[in-house]
Length: 464
Image (tube, rainbow, N blue to C red; front, side):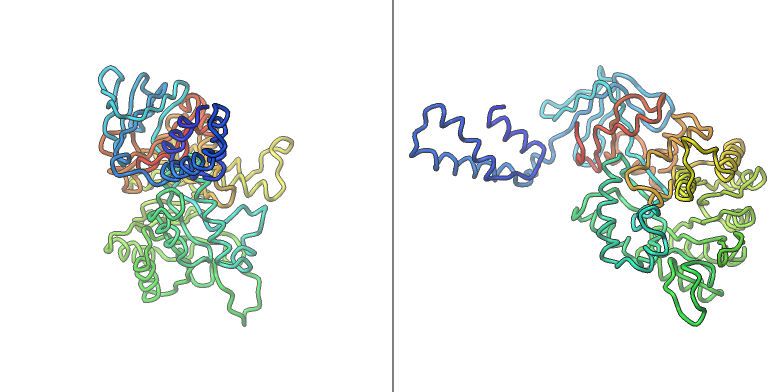
């Protein structure tokens, strides 16, 4: 490739450049007859040119529009992809969307031709834990008790990058699991472009009833740091809710039930306490998500007015109808349930499906039949960050159509999380969070694993 063409390519992509290495590319000019005396000066000039090309783009260059020409566009608003559409991005926003015969491509646009790809809104995962890593690497107890905070934050920066590059441009992180308010700092680091990652909604420490969480199994005379913040009684609960919001929580996460000391899952907070927490948060403009795995916990959380219920393992037709009537969304976290089973020794290729997963299939179908809003939430962190597509694959395996599953991770999730005026659809005026994948995920959801392009806020993080 000619040297100047190569330099232009590097400038276009805004990559870091090894100046010394590229300066050595002056040798083709030497072969063309440039004398020995001129070689050092030539290499010096090329090094200066390369350095200038490596600098951030000027304001004018940053305003240069992008034209995306995929085989099809899944806009998140409907279940049928559009063919022969063009999407124009200017700055951080989507400027125009529509048929190629109607949308004019600006003459100065940089064009991405994606002839075999589907363009869709950046994916949303509404239940992650970026400060955890898979339990087959280290148990939850060991991560909470033995891993230094700096180590956990360092891991999380890699988790965030992997999540973004896999096509997830927005996440709701539901608890730091013993890492305090580190999620607030990580969110700020992304916003300030110190590290790459999806846009984050954070819930900080999460709230549990006194004595209900972990780590457990220690002598009672010792205080063991917990994986969430404990609250007991009205004054304590109000203080914790307001304190977490004051320290940066975009969401309050509260545990409506728990396995008390390893016993059966039982409700922890009363209905009145849950109502109090919801009202305290709502008065400050903050929504509440409830961890609820028992029927009674789900009923109490629903009647208390939370906005999403996480997991929902113990749901039945009655509680799901109540959720639908109250417009409460479900994050089913199917991928986490599968990961737990694998950690316990289940081998899908040779072993029958565990009873727990069969029950999850049944309850999920009951939720669908009741008309519950399903939003994509995987509990990523229990399994590997960057593998968020697994949740959508399981949504389809458990009964959703591929296009419905895609909507649960785009427009439906954005609406449930109060973000639909910003992201979740391929629509003019919205933030340009866009992903291109090879193939058609509305026919084969596994196409989400073949990510070709990732754009967040109009900035390209992965390109073909």
